[in-house]
Structures are given as C-alpha cells and as structure tokens.
Image 1 (cartoon, rainbow, N blue to C red):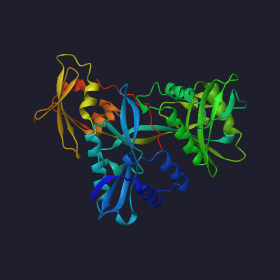
Image 2 (cartoon, rainbow, N blue to C red; image 1 turned 90 degrees about the vertical axis):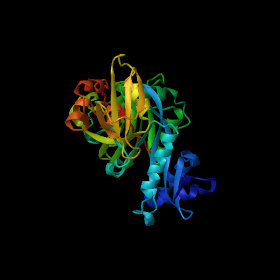
Image 3 (tube, one colour; image 1 turned 120 degrees about the vertical axis):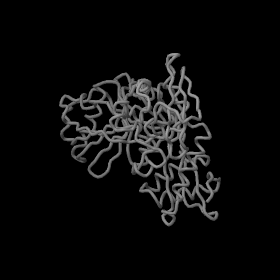
Length: 384
C-alpha cells in the first residue's frame, strides 16, 4: 500500500471515485473539482499502482477557546467498492492523521455518515445543530418588514461577513468565514438548484441573508444570519409565499439560537438538537496550555491522555505551560475523546464524571479540570 497526494493528471480519478461512492450530482462534483479541489489536499491510497481510495483534507480557520486556529475538514472519504473491507480505509485515515499531526495541525473535524466509523480514530461529537421544522401554511407572519434582494457571488459580501460573525459572537467554537467562503457557499447552493437572498432596509443596508434548496415538498435552509426580529420575520414571510407549492420548511442553525422565540407563536417552529460534527484533537500540548494559562503559580498537576492511535501521553501542567513527560504517576486520566469534548464545550466536568469518562487518582487535583468552562453554543454546518 502507498499513500500519497494527488498529481496533476489524476483529478478525474477523484471525480470517478466520488461518483461511484456518493449521491451528489455530476454537476455538483464538477463544481467541487473546479472550485474546492486542490491536489495538495486530495490524499490517495494505492495498491499495485492503482488508486483504490481517497479523502480530502480541506483547510479552514476555526475560532476555538477565543483564538483562531488552523484546522482541517476531512471530507469525501471513500474506498472504491471492490476494495472495501480490505484495510484500505484504516490505513488511509491513520496516514492522514499522522501526516496532519506532523504538520502541526491542531484539530481535525468531519461530518460523519455514521459516528461509529470514525470513533476508532479518536473522533468524537463536539458540536450540535438545532433543526427547526414547520409547515409553511402555519407560519404566522403576514407582512414583510424589509426588502428581499437576490445575492450572488458577484456581490460585495463584506456586510454579510460582518452579520455572520456577529451572529457567532456567543459561540464557543465556529467556522471563521470571509467573502470567499460565502461565495463558495452561495455557488454550491446554486449548483444544488437553490437560491440565496439578502434582507435589506429601504436604504439598502443589509440586515441578514439566507440560502436554501428545495427537494420534493420540502424547503431546506442551509444557512441564515440576521440582525434583528424584523429580518427573521421577513425571511419567514418569504417562505410562506411558497405554501401553495411546498409543504414543509426545515432550518439548520447553531445550538442555542432560539429561533422559535422570534415568532409570536413559538410552538410553530419545532426544535430538535442533533449531533453534527465530530472532532479529533492532534496538538494536545497547545490546547492544554491555552486552557490552563491562568493557573496560579502553586497550581500544578499531571494529566494522562489515553490515545489509541498515537499512544498515551502524560503532561505536567504548571503556570500556563504543558510539558510532556515520561511518568507512571499522574493525578487524572482521560481519553483524547473526553479532552476533545471538554475543549469544544460539549461536556463539562460533572457530566464527564457521571459518564465515568474520568479516572481520578488525586481528588484534590480535580478542581483544576473545572477551570475548563463549557459553552455548548457552536456552529459547523460545512458541506465542502
């Protein structure tokens, strides 16, 4: 087996594997190959010089623990049908993670088709989304408060970036977006047969945006961000105008958004919290130092991290520094998965204890872990 990155004449091979594996249209895959594909991000696994599988390591910036961090979104992990069950998937995943760790990448995330598939590589859920549903005919909004304007990748999107970033202010972890990110999102939506619109005041100042697709009787809002109640009501008014053509509306947004409170009849929007993104921490030292930067001078403890892929490691944490050490004596033991969920705010210490995810050898040191302040609000709804 050989694992290497894509070469100049091999992009069509990636397209073929994608077509053989996933349900996306050829038009969508062509867009992806033109707009997102990069040879240096497309990892292949080969047997006897034949490419039998691939994955993409797409770079993105995320905000986590109040700092912007380079991360990798792992997507389109696929093994050709006839080679499944022969160990290629495992080899490809392990080589990718080892390579990313050696490059200094701190964290990797993915949107799993099944969470069990990736757990054996240290991935664990760290971000939920809120899914809201309603019938279009039930929407109580009778009038629109703002203008609705169509948005395309040709627009100046600086104002939309500001609106998105403002809507993320209370999130602990989220994708950092710029104009290019939004252009790709809107183009992807268009390739899927969808539309993107902005909400604007009479003077043209933007108050929000939303992007959506349609399928059968359903309208699916992939992303929305808005400044105030009037902007959200205008969006809902817009979708109500489709009630003679479509039946249901589904909205995906960040956990804690409380969208139902923006309507006079709160029960119209039915909410479900759904696990969405799995994470895998690679740079343990950096994250530990970021958590414990405020330790007092006399506060010190040794934390053991269990990791099935990269072997177990012990860290002495003192004065905001984490030092990797060789020792059999430690105060607290947790898995890389539990550390990931604590850092992303998916779990707090009390919950981790109830779930028996922490092995405590020194009760007096446990209070140091409580310095990790959980905040479950996050938003990762990435598709490419």
